[in-house]
Image 1 (cartoon, rainbow, N blue to C red):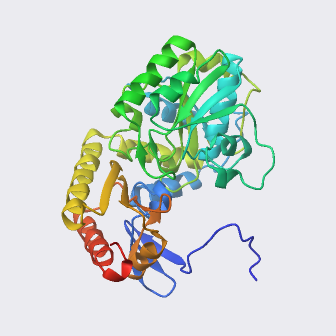
Image 2 (image 1 turned 180 degrees about the horizontal axis):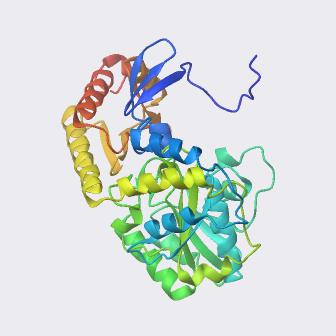
Length: 384
């Protein structure tokens, strides 16, 4: 028995080396990594500029408390809010922490407590973030949750309108639900949310932990919608593999983040700030984001050519895509893909989630599609 707790259903491979989109296990087998650490490694494994940045910063100072000024935080915050209506940032360590901060500040700012979230959402596993997550399997076994969360069907305008009253502090959602099935918000639903928040003194929290930092082809996924958030939460790609997260907010929220209202020991540490700044400098270039969109279009078009459209559909945005196979459990398919040298993850029982690094090459996309085609068209996979 391992000295580790058994809270992960681990795959029986150990990855010991990675470069770009390629990883190698302890037996020397190579794989294409289309998980990116679940959307974390936006620039792939061991990106040389990130490695150099981390090394250089590690030789200066690793950590200093937020009791002191950390100039790199200011520069990073300015880079993240540039050309946006959002104006201020708070830095922490994980997506769950970022969502906890947004939930706390929404309640504090409005003086109200009810928060609307949506079925198949995922916001983290701390008690507040878990309570915001509208999935019973995430709640099971933990007793009473943090109360005053209302769960509604995603993209259901009438259900949302019927749930609005004076007690609602905020609406919280993912622009594209990642864990919940790669479900994108509709234009109609986005417009309805904007109207409700504008007319009812309700804040909008967008969880961009998975969709942010170029994953959908823009800096943040909300930029492809009419949504105008009061808070945007970030993690995963923000650190490019280094644990780092944050919250962006509007100037109206500034006074709510008053001294003593929230904090973190490690958040915004110099190591994380330096790496995140380098990630943002690379990913937020217009030319880089254009390439992400072009690669997304290519990947989708090639998948649609290779796979039977009567059995399989593709959904999502940018390089957060779901291969949806109706009435088929994808777990054994994912194992077969792994055997063939392609690492992917699921997004629910019948969705294969594709999350390659944003700088994946066209050749690597072609290789991944060839493996998907080989496995998915094999009769033993039982698509029929």
